[in-house]
Image (cartoon, rainbow, N blue to C red; front, top):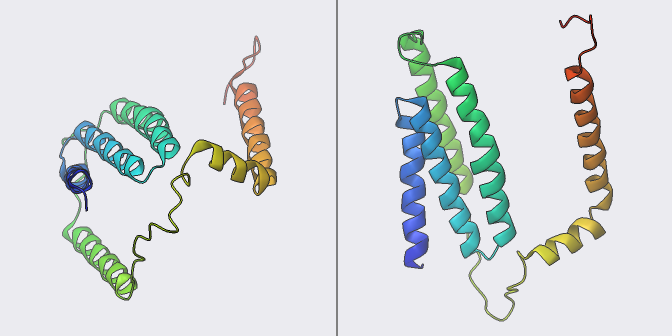
Length: 169
């Protein structure tokens, strides 16, 4: 294992814990952005440059700005947060522990494949290979997704358009 992989893993785990343990929701979002950046570093180590760039642009950029906007819009603070009963905390701990138990049981008998330099393809995560697979094997789902997004965009414009004298809901 390379030292860069170990460093990125360590920072990713610490920032993920920061997301969970931070009292301030804004700090939680900032820790989540750091987690996304470290995951993009892992993608770069796996030679998936396109996936790393998309992860930073889409998740660390657009989605986190949306999360931050919603958090600031709701003005969450400790005084307005209702106190959770002890039963809810115990139920959450039991659910989290059972999820951990299921994950450990599912991963118990896994033998990861080793690295074989003879069959390793260094071009597997490149954009041109992704484009070939996307437009050859998955052309129909790609086009259906684009039509669905176009219909959603037209619907959003129609709902947001105001006529003179028209009332909103």
